Length: 243
Image (tube, rainbow, N blue to C red; front, side):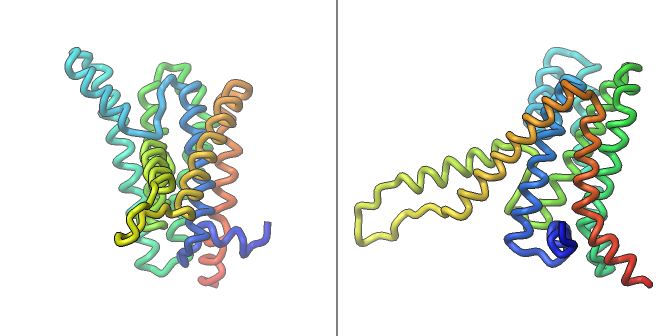
């Protein structure tokens, strides 16, 4: 791929097009990690709705072990998002080209570690730690695209996507009869974006599930390589700028 094209994904100069490209790429990664992670550890890790619901259930049922594991997952997602915000703001303060590339690089490193060490962790019964690692990765990733797009795009869960798609479809189907009132109109461009994000999450889920079935934990290595590819050009720009 041309260098200027790769630069647009994680460049600090954000445009609507670059945000959409980054969002679609990360939606695919999120779908793959979420579905593949379920095959690996038996739990979805990209959305916190289920985690918080499970916390309530386990608290009511008195399952202290599961309660602590759920709290660890929730805390890991919080910590991942916070880490992403710290890295991005640190880069912005220094006018770094890599302010968005740094958390992408960290995510790539963690997925690489998961791919190489995940099987060993699972074999030794460290399921809660493995789940927490994936939750951290998902929190880290969701905060990247949220800050880059000024909260227009999120990639690690589809509840909001489906809700917004439903809203826009409702507007699209609305019959405007009164000529003296402002018509209800759908934002077709936003609808296309939301649909593409949902499609990429689904495609990533299929790829992740198939990859984990066939390859096991190493299925995350191509995802780590893809994230590194998205991050590498802004990082190189910073290195060149120091020389």
